[in-house]
Length: 488
Image 1 (tube, helix red, strand yellow):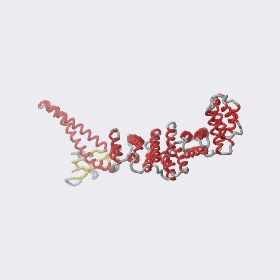
Image 2: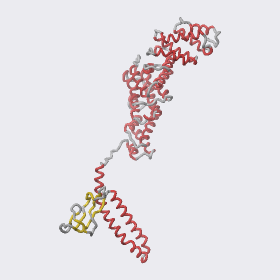
Image 3: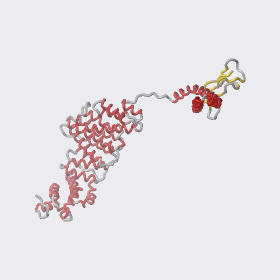
Image 4: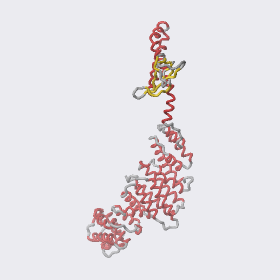
């Protein structure tokens, strides 16, 4: 067993092998593993043997002809700076030339810890080919969860949006072909593991949603399975669906801009088809309940703005095992939120926008015009009543106060009501631009535009029996005739 002092023969042997220029990559790897279990490296990092071993690792990382040896050397450089942290900035700069061209396949490294260190190295570099390399490594990673998470975090850090990340992953997974007896099951497990890593990295990321995020997610989950075949194992199906549903939940909770986008839930419909298309398995009830809450809140968010989205409402039927349950959720939402306008609440209660025939502006105007004659006649009656009221008010009230005081207050109220009614009719007529032309009993110049002759033949001047109802122009002049008056 290695000890914690340099006097240990094992530690001395490991240091010699680490510094030996003729040591194989595997021997140097084992030597560094032995040294890492002691406290020698952090304290004696300036030892010439340590410096020699470091130089050999860097040289192999830059010049090794064997692809696996090159990758291992890069990973070991990162492992070395995990032990001697003060070397990190310098070593990263010295490693940059190794990333001037695409690296060999990460899966050439058999150990998950080595792939993790290589992923850490990639995360500190910048090169045009790196995002696709990282996406491919994620698709092909079978067992090293830490390496996968490191790759996902680095891919997200180097991308412009979450949608971009998912589209890159969709391309990588679609190109991957599992060499197994059940490629659909293998692909489903790889997708589930990658989605779980995305969910974990998402909590620490401020990456924006991007364009058509829901479509990108749907294509990432569906396209690879369409290429290799549907998973046959129930557990593989359920695990993938659980992770996909939870990812939708995590996205809409952290990226509010997409919560009301119906395409964000498109992958949910695919998952339901994946598990048979009928009822959801009981194992998925918890993530389904979370998404039902998410969709309900999205409907409420839109409803408070007076908006209705039928495609979003339809997602409740996808999430619920029975249409009746989906309708009950929507009705309960309407009942709990009376502040929503009645059109939105009616839509939630009935599940659809009920057709309401809206009258055209011309139809509304035609209907209003039909009322203009009645308004005009009411205007004539109001003016006559007002004239009578003005003539009767003082003598009538005076006499009642002397001969029947009990009737005086009621009579006064009646006369005041006539006055108020006349004013209201005048205002209604003014709003419609209506007025009367001619005063009953007065003589006016006869015009067939405004009057109809009764009881005789037309003359140049005739007596008004009933005024004409006319519409006034903006300049105050007489315009169209609504109803002709009567003269004799």
